[in-house]
Image (cartoon, rainbow, N blue to C red; front, top):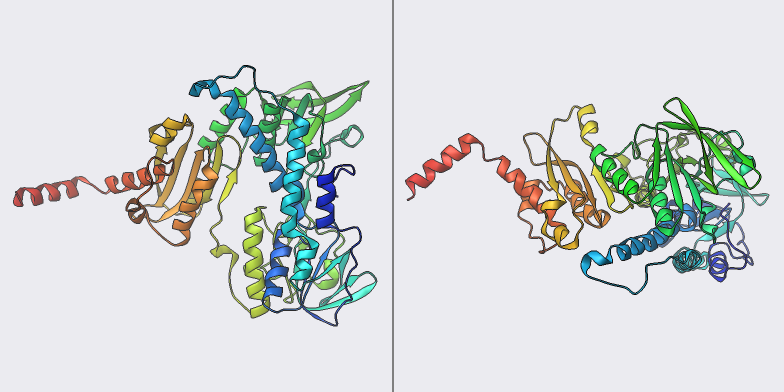
Amino acid sequence: MQTLLQDDPHDQRLLANSHPPDWRNPPIAKRYNLAVIGAGTAGLVCAAAAAGLGAKVALIERELMGGECLNSGCVPSKALLRAARAYGDATRAAEYGLTASSGVGIDFATVMKRMRRVRAELSEKDAASRLRSLGVDLFFGEGRFAGPDSIELMGQTLRFSRAVIATGSLSASLPIKGLTETGFLTNETIFSLNTLPRRLLVVGGGPNGCELAQAFSRFGSRVTLLEAEPSILPREDADAAQIIRKALLREGIKIIENCRIQQVRQSANERFACVAANGICREIAFDQIFLAVGRLPMVEGLRLEVAGVRYDRLKGVLTDERLRTSNPRIFAAGDVCSVSKFTHLADAMARIVVRNALFRGREKLSALTIPSCIYTDPEVAHVGLYEHEALERRIPVETFFQPLADVDRAIIDGETEGFLKIHVRRGTDQIVGATLVAKHAGETISELTMAIAARIGLKAVARIIHAYPTQAEAIRKVADSYNRSRLTPRVRWLLGKWFTLTR
């Protein structure tokens, strides 16, 4: 359960929107066109879209509206990252000729207060009252299946023609000796901190771990980042991961890779983690330990067996390409059934579910083009296939590389650490994947996402005029590189003949 501060007015505003203390559940209708379990991103989109089309919709939530994204994921983490980025920019002010009478400081309590204010403001969009105004029957409580077309709720039976499982995911833990006794932070609890940890141990060098490690380091924590794999960001482009690794090391973060925590212990007022790496076990003192080791689908307590829905405790609810479960009446969307746990993907999946469940559509998840972004500084954005994935699928590719050090706007901004890689199917201009490392990579990757989704090749991209100077010019430069690659010796010879004849 998300931890909220009882004496914080912003958290109380969040609670009033996301789970009003005085909420009264409506009477249960005889039957619903669509019943949705879970009011995170996927569940909210399903419920609002279906109700907007005129369907009779029931939405069931046991905790807070908005799910992980609003309460303990994207919104609070990016609010902290924005503050950390502002600090990072301020510390570089002298490079741009700016001077200040005193150094840059951080008021951690104010940073957290701003985060809670922003989160409370955004909760208005997911408020219980808004869903009710859309005609959704919203129920707070525990919903579990009572049969293939029914849900048990508050001791009553809710019947449906179609249902959606959108219960999301929760932070994973690790079976580390002493961890429970010593205490630890996850996404559900770290955003309730008001005191900055002097020493923070971050376990997990994936996107979440790297983002918050960098943020807390900038706030003033001494951060140690642990990763079980040989490198942080093991699923990302290796060159991109190396840039982020160097950036974190440069900011004073200690990184230990290829390691395991054997146990955690407390002695007097000190906490220690025994970390094994390269055959050596060392003790690391810390004040707080933050687990960023992935997320697990929330399938417990739903009685999926009663509904005839197949699932796996690690993979979640099992669906086909059209997001239909083993029970043809029941669909799933979002983190509970997806390997990639992105808010924008949950939104897109929910739209597929509405069309397929209510209108017998045949849309497929595999047809989606899904971008991703890691919000470190610089950011790492990606869409489509990585080079190794293309090779695994036996898709021959050619890669075009553009360093930001050759992009005018990046030079002007002093943000030359980064690059753009675009992979095209060999012999064509078809874009199959791209990785961008840049200060605002997440804002730029959408152009390439659109190109892949709309099957716009690099030849067409080269004809698109990009405003000058912008860092998005890197895309145009790659497209120009592709066009130059088509000037083979034979083509040059033919052009020479042409120009000779037309003098």
